[in-house]
Length: 362
Image (cartoon, rainbow, N blue to C red):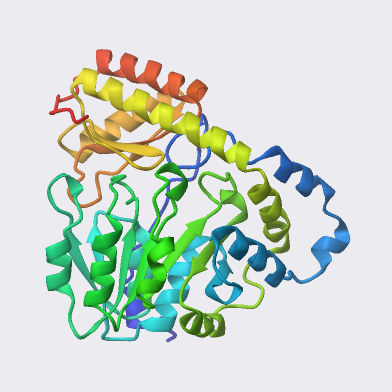
């Protein structure tokens, strides 16, 4: 009887609640209004011949590399950041290796590490979800081959200082260090200028969040040129589709659109955090386009909250299953119009439901 590898059978499942997403979608950290009009114009201009040809990745990789200030040899476009994670795991992990994550964090790190046959070592975040630098250093062994750190982190929105990240990279020279900067645009801080100090550091960026291209699945992986040559061996030559490649230059060209959207999102984030503070709801100050808040003490509390918001036409994400996130939900922020709808529904909710009050954070 045909059976999958034992490592595959043991992979934790990830089922994003994508079905029935009717209403204002503030549950997946997407751009709440979508991409630049320039991208839509480019989509409309595509021809049957454009779609009949295999995609040519290199010219667009050069454009993205130039935008980010790295060489062509240091960058690889990927099918979203998820593929970048997969490629790193396939390139550097083997059965019996160790891979390290700080929890709570993005679920796909563990899934891809486990699929490669590695033993995943989970280091709990510190108080207030601070980065546990000392604990991570203690967790590094001679079997550690990959460390993945989201910065800002999802779902907490916390940010880890560049010097701490480089210290981890120096402490594990035989491990690939992934710094996932999917939410870079909303914090404006990056390790990119200092990446070459440690050749084992890799950085990812995405067009799924601020750029509003989640449906096209395109991201970028940046690393040392010699290391990137190994990743190219693992990667499919046609991993990014022609439609996505056609749209990326237009998305990059409209930075005014991105700046306006990011500015409005940051204002929305401040508005939500102000309301949560006033209401005495525990939350964690965020450096991303979302805020994590504790609306109860159990998963049942957060599930009830999510359902009540759904009935009001607004989707938010239950994060109670994440480490130390019991009773927590995550709110995606976007335009003022959408945030005003969220705040109105939140006020109504808090009046009707008995939400255990926490200690607010500003």
